[in-house]
Amino acid sequence: MLDSLKGFGLTFSQMFDKRFTYQYPFEIRPTAPRFHGRHVLNRHPDGLEKCVGCELCAWACPADAIYVEGGDNTEEERYSPGERYGRIYQINYLRCILCGLCIEACPTRSLTMSNEYELALDNRQDLIYTKEQLMAPLLPGMEAPPHPMRLGDTDTDYYVGRERATTGAGEHPAPTGAERPEGGR
Ligand code: SF4
Ligand code: SF4
Image (cartoon, rainbow, N blue to C red; front, side, top):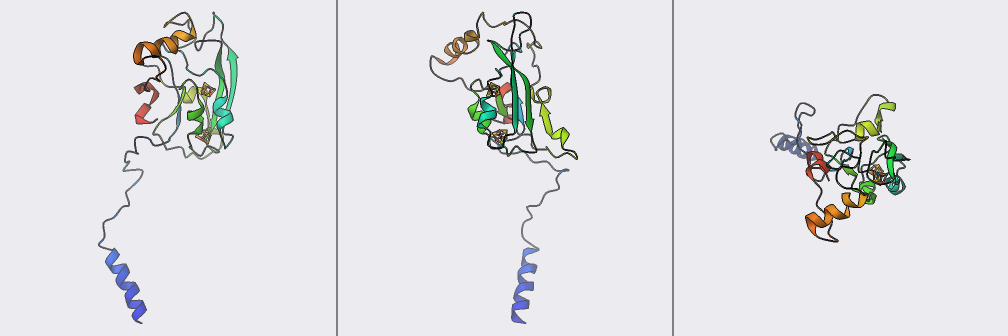
């Protein structure tokens, strides 16, 4: 009997505690700034793609969630500076555990993660995101690929030259706003 009263007393006291429940999806709260959400494939300031189709992200993924096929750039049809670009790029969000290892592996800072977490759908096929869905939007001043390199004659001008100009040799430039949509890393 005493134990029952203690139990009811505990329940009763909890009724007046502060509530932490909120009414999602009607009330959406911001995530932590470095929250790992949906991926983004970023662009250079002229609109060319940063992805070079190297597949390092796919190899780093512990869940085998990324599929990449590289393609060759030509002078007539160029999607990224240098030789190669990501011709096919897919992330399977049925597998992805949003661990972020892929973005650590990416050598060009092409792949980053946004704060978007609403990835629930009612069918499996639509959870395989394609390159078109993952590409960052064109910002003012950017031109949709394919087009020639606008920032220099070689891919070095897109990386080493810009890095030296902005931060000094050997220092990695901070990611731009375009690389970190909605504050993601
Ligand atoms: S976040 Fe992790 S699980 Fe998801 S694609 Fe990247 S490496 Fe794979
Ligand atoms: S996203 Fe980065 S790591 Fe993945 S294929 Fe493109 S350049 Fe390579």
